[in-house]
Image 1 (cartoon, rainbow, N blue to C red):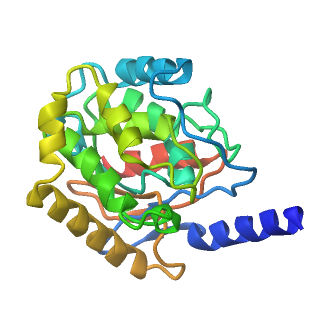
Image 2: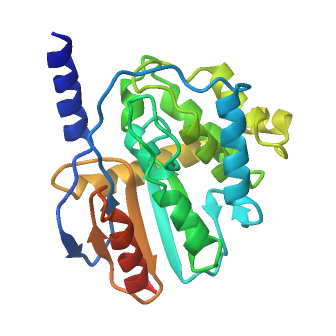
Length: 270
């Protein structure tokens, strides 16, 4: 029965995070849907003051140090290519895309290091600016109906101090298992307290601002509209890559070829 349930769970996540195959060119949007098959049993999130959290902070500090941030945008404002990531902070497939290869999430999936490479090779060098936007997928399975709004608002509020990507990356490096209700106030505050230069009191107040909540709602509506144009519907992560003069094109799947495909898409957009 346990094996059958695990199989059903994997099938459900495949449907939720299903992708388009091949490469396509569209006049309106460029969508990259990164998907992997999940497996394994869930575990608790990383303890905020434990050794895994210390390692996560060290990794994220090194990854992002010195790169300009404004709101949810990481990188040089005038970079020739814009990469927009629609993600859900509870999504374990987003986590695979974002986390380093040294990390294994609670579902037993190893990080690919693709986002680390994107930031290191393209954002840090000024070739790409990276934008994060909220899109609800995995959070809909959280017992706490407000989990999505709370966690995404936490990242947006950190962005008001130029630390959105610190919050996002730390969250992905310290995820709990999907559907377990691990996103509590203690967990969200624990992530914020790990960001060395974040004004915690200001962050607590900013999370409640109407503008922050409206930003999460607007991002989610836009991401949903993008997903509804796809045969498989809304999924995360969805990556939009756009150059100033390039025509949009789509690249999908989280495979061993994803990184080279992503590089080619960026090159075409330059």
